[in-house]
Image 1 (cartoon, one colour):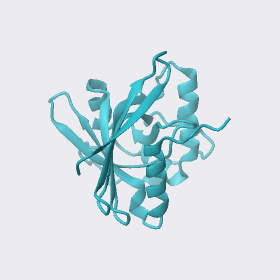
Image 2 (cartoon, rainbow, N blue to C red):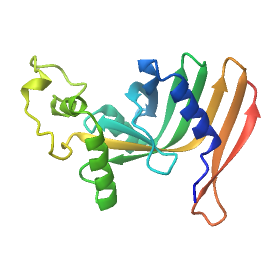
Image 3 (cartoon, helix red, strand yellow):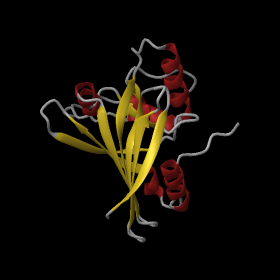
Image 4 (tube, rainbow, N blue to C red):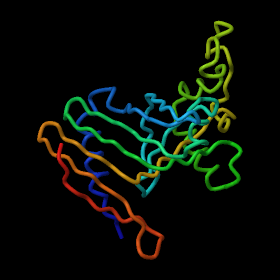
Length: 199
């Protein structure tokens, strides 16, 4: 039995499709809050949805500041703007961080699948020096050998965002919809509601 796609997810898939001719349409901003209470924002690449779910996949380096931020506060918000269709999605939710030390075998398998779904060139970046630290040498990523068949490097981390709120705004039609999730009565499923709100 096929599961119906959530309305906000269908809007997002439509936006991705209609803007797919623009390379930047696969990039979005991710905001986190650090231990100082100050926000941090960065641009990341959309890696798809977790199979049969609304959870968003992101590849990142476990040595980046966003990991420390998420340890302090496991919530984040995506802001994604599609320049051709004039659509904005703000997706707020809890982030699950899956690195090599995760004790859950299923999550480690998911991390490995995501690693092999990534291009070889993208994998090379995890061989580089610690992101955000002073640059001590001119190191080329291509100098370090990487076996194409080997599993995830220690620095590779999979982030899974579990959306709780989606604020959708179509600037062409001035339509804005807030999608909000709640736990079902049995507590096992998310139920989504939507409300038209002022732009």
